[in-house]
Structures are given as structure tokens and as C-alpha cells.
View: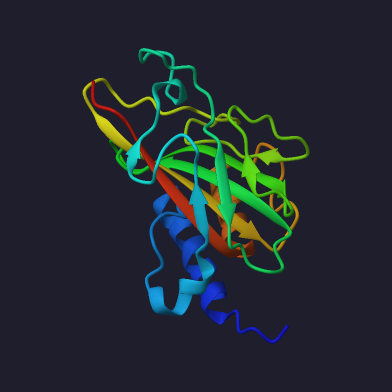
Length: 191
């Protein structure tokens, strides 16, 4: 394949630097949108629209109706050469800086959705900001409304890090192997 991957590799390098400097990394839009437009793919959910509210059941149990479930996600338009996917969920509105709520990788490259409250086989999970593996549901302080970004990364590697990897290891590993990505944002909290 003669496709020039320099913009994507440069973006991955910049993401790795952001991960080591910013602590959470892998956030934000590409700096040069025209160079990396083909890198982005579509992510949707049957239970919420991009920029709208997450239904209560996807929040933590301290909120009314909160069940801590992962929302269903679907994606399309991913690049050729995708061997696996990773999902990173973060809260950019947390006090003290963005907080990572989920890091999972090794999702088979033929998959294009995860169901509600997914239990994914043959995957690896990195540690969250709270240094725990697994999904930490949205749980902003009462009275605060936060955005939760569900970013899916198409990777050229089947499993870029080992189970239980720290953020300083998992996020740069995802960045090194990213060949495409997509995102959907859901809002939660405010009561």
C-alpha cells in the first residue's frame, strides 16, 4: 500500500508526547484537520446523540437510575488495515484536568459495535485515572454537568499493551498504533 501515513504517524507521535506531558493524553481534535480528515470515522449510539445527554442508567449508582452500564456504540468508515480497536472514555471537565474512565484494547478489527454493558472477550484493559482496570461510569459531583468522550481508535496492532497497563504506558501504545479514530460525546450530571 503506497498510502502516505506521515500525517497519521506525526499525529500519533504528538499524542504520545501529550500523553506523557499531560498525564491523560489522546484527547482533542487533530491540529491540522485538512491533513488528517481521512483519519476520522463515524461513531454513533442508539441511546444518545453526539453532544446530547447520556440516559441515567449509564451513570454511577449515586445518581437516580444510575446502573453504571457501558452505552452501546457503533462505528463505520474505519480505515483499511485495521487489526483491532481501542476505546478510551474520558471526562475533560473534571476538576484538576481530564480523567480517564476506561481504556480497553484488543477489540477484534472485524467488530463494528459494542452492546450495552458489554463484556468483551479476548481484550485487555488499562488502568483508569483512579488506577483501576474496567469501566468507571460517569459520576460528576452533584450540581455539575460534564462531557464524556467515547473515542474509538482503529489500530494496526492486535493488542498494543498488556492487561493492567498504567495510563503512561497504555495511552502512548494506543497513539503509536492509531490509524484512524472516531468520537461521540455524551453529557451527564447537573442535578
